[in-house]
Amino acid sequence: MEIEIATIGGYEEVGRQMTAVRAGTDIVIFDMGLNLSKVLIHDNLRTEGMHSLDLIDMGAIPDDRIMSDLEGDVKAIVPTHGHLDHIGAISKLAHRYDAPVVASPFTIELVKGELADEQKFDSGNDLVKMDAGETMSIGDSGKVELEFVNVTHSIIDAINPVLHTPEGAIVYGLDKRMDHTPVIGDPIDMKRFREIGREGEGVLCYIEDCTNANKKGRTQSERVAREHLRDVLYSVEDYDGGIVATTFSSHIARVKSLVEFAKDIGRQPVLLGRSMEQYSGTAERMGFAEFPDDLGMFGHRNSVDRTFERIMNEGKEDYLPVVTGHQGEPRAMLTRMGRGETPYELDDGDKVVFSAGIIPEPTNEGQRYQAEKLLGMQGARIYSDIHVSGHLRQEGHYEMLDALQPQHVIPAHQNMKGFSGYVDLASNQGYKLGRDLHVTCNGNLIQLV
Image 1 (cartoon, rainbow, N blue to C red):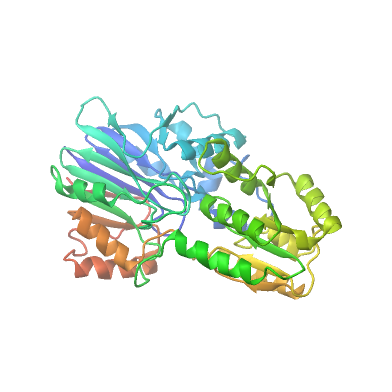
Image 2 (image 1 turned 30 degrees about the horizontal axis):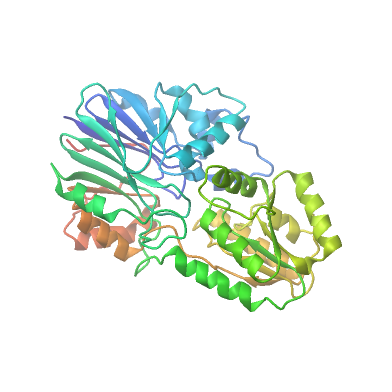
């Protein structure tokens, strides 16, 4: 059976992930993501009403026109998890393909939200939920099967999809860390990865997330970030002014820890911002997380400002707002607070806790720097990087290569500089550039069989 891989997006940057695998005449697309930094550099740009071709031209979503070079039919669109760099282009591109979107339950709910907000295109794609550990037949030959393997990441219900073919398995390894003690959900299923590496024809190809491939050691568990966060918030328990926290809205485990520790230090937590309300509300509704009955979640701008007014009237010392804006996004709550555009007034000595790392991309780095400076000019004291990454470091990559023992490896989710660490470690394991280690760009085809 011919096996061909199209590296469509995410092979020259962190963002807009999209890869297609052709097994015979059956094609499966993994991820359809957005490069958010290409959107954020434009003031007040709304993608909902934009045409896909305009977004392709500005580098915001994958250029999927290379799909016309693949001889076959798309049978499934499979996002690995609910981050926008993996699902943010589904509303713009999925309607071109007569195929269902197949994803884990939480991811499907987030895809529904993206499709509901879309103003330009109507998607008729079926939405199919599949849990980790389950499989699905792909195409009519009976020879190709899709499997979901549970992984841990900075969002709940993440999976790595595996496409089983007569020539071996294709493992799409975006995005994960090896967390054996997660705060929410099950540990990464390394047992299943080892089985896949040793059954049948083994692993033909492994496509790997290289976000942290230049960093030595291993990525720590979410439990470590939780204890770091507990230490920081307990240390300011006696402060009688304002404390504000920000984290990834999609990081439900981290939001849950913030809510819990706010209560511990005698403050009422409140979640503020559209995405904060969306992700946490969805997680609670689906039973992935439990929050206190009195936890307020407000996404609409007017509701947020009214909540800020109430906090100022009743006393900042009694509340801990958890807000959007950890990357310094221009329209996010924390950035508006730094510009003095909300009723919440920062005073000298007030604490701002960034429970998030900076996404390694120049736009994010610049905006985060600006946000911290604006907050500091108002007297805020910054607690930065109370966080652990959702991506493997080098020791995790070695462990995955040992578990899967793939015949071919394709680095992804970075640019050429970001690939360098992975090339070195894969070379140390006997892989060779141009033979079985394929460093590639967006818009390329790799014929494996």
